[in-house]
Length: 347
Image (cartoon, rainbow, N blue to C red):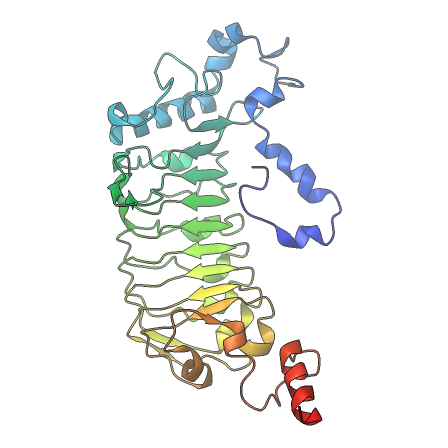
């Protein structure tokens, strides 16, 4: 939970303590009661203080309560699977509204209502939850073992701007009926690590991808995206998981992809109008890569000749071919060296 569900794997190799100190922003309100320094709580978390004017009259807390109640009204809160303690007469932090997590200052940091029967539109002010770190209003699956998911979320319309949510790191909205990303989502580029909105009705990619300097996960598969392939796609230098399958992407992929050296999964499959040539030096540059998927595209070139007819082209399927003159001894997989040794020995 402290890492927000994303493994920051490079931190396993070194640490100056900064990452751990940075997790204080995720400490939940009830946990912080053991050491709180809030001036409204001079004697710790005594429940009676939740009704005090010093606590309730805080402008930001009042605004956040209003926004959450607006979501409840606009997304059919009366029919939600769970809506424990959501009430105008209670407090989101003290009364632990279902799906809401607050920080030590009593500000909302997580809003998690997946598979909860939300039906309607997202309030335009939701992005004014200025301390928000994680938003999850997704549907995990439309059905389970042929049984319909009775509480799938069905949010429609446009996703609101998050320009005031300057700390947001994770947005998970998959499995809804949303039609448009916010025009200014790039303003969240300095903090956003995960954007997942598979299985919606989106028609365009986020603008100015080079601004998303920390993006780790981009999942926009199974939408209606008809954009040209962005020329700045390769600026997603920290991207690990990229899924854009089953869209209507067009234009050409190209050399810029080499810049995505940390990519583990790239899925561009089932975009028939997508053309271009994948650079061969991906074989060497993408050292962490697991698999590539370009099935049912019009991508050509050497890598395409090996990968175009399979749903998942694992790295071993394209890095052990040709004459390997591109590789240094350290780049050649052990299995290739072993095979060559056996061949030379005459066995």
